[in-house]
Image 1 (cartoon, rainbow, N blue to C red):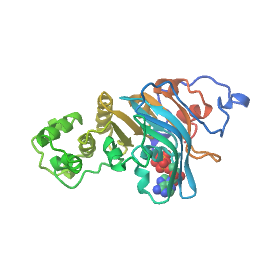
Image 2 (tube, rainbow, N blue to C red):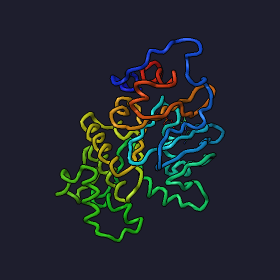
Image 3 (cartoon, helix red, strand yellow):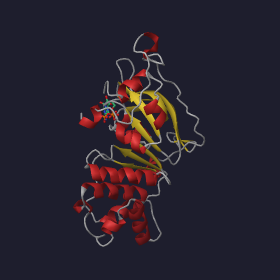
Length: 294
Ligand SMILES: Nc1ncnc2c1ncn2[C@@H]1O[C@H](COP(=O)(O)OP(=O)(O)OP(=O)(O)O)[C@@H](O)[C@H]1O
């Protein structure tokens, strides 16, 4: 566990709730959360009663919430609580893991992405993903951008696509004279922005980011955080982060998840980031954001 994970966020202002008896949790501990449906009109994603098992092991339990369009939503919670599993449900990446069973619904713009009629490849085009460790292909910068576009049968102006994708990922000025250089020759932060540009090039609606800054230094991290805010003007961004300060800095909405001895992968609390960090409704959220566990 990193130092950042254990430190309470400086933005935290927790309410003075009692520490004992009935006030321990505003919601009964261990209760399945059912629907946590903030009033979010026209969400990009709606999750309803989502549960997931890896073989016999349950990793998500009855998760329901709506993810707002063109905002940054952060998934936070202690290690192993199911954040990455939930994130991977949004582009059907869990389908690729043998033995996975899913119940419940994930609607993308009102369409159930697990419906038989839906092509998972099309889902993954609409829902791009950026991983913890930058993973450019061992090809040129230009080829990295064009790869997904080619797979999707892109017929437009390739040079324009490369430039626009790199501009949107705030990388163009740094690489415009070196487009044939290997993506692997870039710095870690530049590689991550190249991966974001590669995701953007397939014209997604949503970009999933699974701890995108955990392998980066503080300066590269701030650049990616600025970029996330910029990208949220055009895309719905969902980020998994261990770093609560980062969640507080970049996200509009935050979902707090927990696995305890009774229930795996529950959504404990969800709402506007400022509210969740300053006036959490559930004692477990308060304990987590103030560094008392996890
Ligand atoms: N491919 C898999 N096969 C079996 N179990 C898995 C698999 N991936 C995750 N799990 C289990 O599911 C649970 C949730 O894992 P997940 O990676 O989603 O949690 P997380 O909150 O993202 O954790 P971390 O913050 O440590 O990355 C954990 O108990 C984990 O061991």
